[in-house]
Image (cartoon, rainbow, N blue to C red; front, top):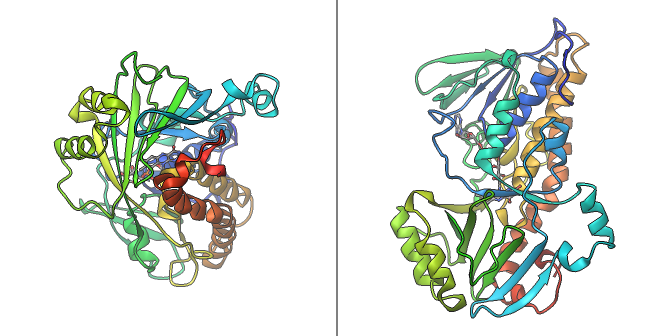
Length: 398
Ligand SMILES: Cc1cc2nc3c(=O)[nH]c(=O)nc-3n(C[C@H](O)[C@H](O)[C@H](O)COP(=O)(O)OP(=O)(O)OC[C@H]3O[C@@H](n4cnc5c(N)ncnc54)[C@H](O)[C@@H]3O)c2cc1C
């Protein structure tokens, strides 16, 4: 699904896709459909793409889906991963720097098969910028308020501002707290992970922690608290503090987030963590309650024949394995491929859509099922004693 300089004109039977949510999954789908000239409309509740600038930094595993979308992303690749205890003592380290140039993993990395860090806002900008003009603008400030799909025919989305749009299929990419999922596919609400993640972005001081843009550092007390530091861009790092103490119900203003993090981790590594917190501008601080869901087999039966879900709306997972964003990009790409592959045929009726979406969903959910489970297990591993195991291997492989 690479960009084509002259995408074929869409066949007359090409369906019109409504995409709700211009996050990673929705933009990936939009971009992939654009590469084949397939008609679609993209809506997002945010008033503008700048609305939530600070965001956080993501780790992309090899960036395969992004490459298949034709994106050439700026890559900040770390070569060393360091685990410290709360006193600042080294517990473990691994990474290309230690594996040496000759190892299998280092050879793969030299060919570009390596993980890298990129801010979610930059990734979103790259996805937005890559959409060709013909794709039409994203409709910002459009919060989905209802979906009406009275029969097997077209589907209409209505928005909080009273406007509406009709298409052949509706793809809900509206994130972890998906309105569409809650109203169109009744299932238990997302499951709290009893962990809150707080984040901040700062320019790192030269010492004492090795924040040299080639090193990822995690510091843990083995008693529920963990601080993870990775590059945000080429000048700043992100700290991500998580604490296993049940959902945090207190006020979540930046000052509250900073003071809670300072209270729980400020003295770690001889006060080095406290220094990072004081270097963090309050406007670059945020926090998220982490949830996931048990996955259904598909979204058929109980849902609508022409509505499906992608990304976090379909399969939210904890961020502790760094997979949710990768999966969201892949979902969009894969769904676009399937829609395109049916374009030469007669227009799909309700039953045809049901079949296409069922196959897509079972493939998508089958691929992420294990990832959702391992991301859930990682909560316990990374916040308990296990994370302090003295062995130079990734914490995920313990
Ligand atoms: C702290 C943290 C760290 C993470 N780290 C990583 C990582 O390292 N690697 C990784 O792969 N993943 C990571 N993730 C997960 C990753 O960010 C998500 O899985 C990914 O962003 C999901 O993309 P999405 O498009 O499904 O949802 P989002 O990116 O959340 O996009 C949803 C969009 O829908 C819009 N929307 C919401 N409601 C409505 C509505 N009613 N109407 C219209 N629009 C609506 C929102 O405005 C938003 O733009 C992390 C997540 C967190 C919280």
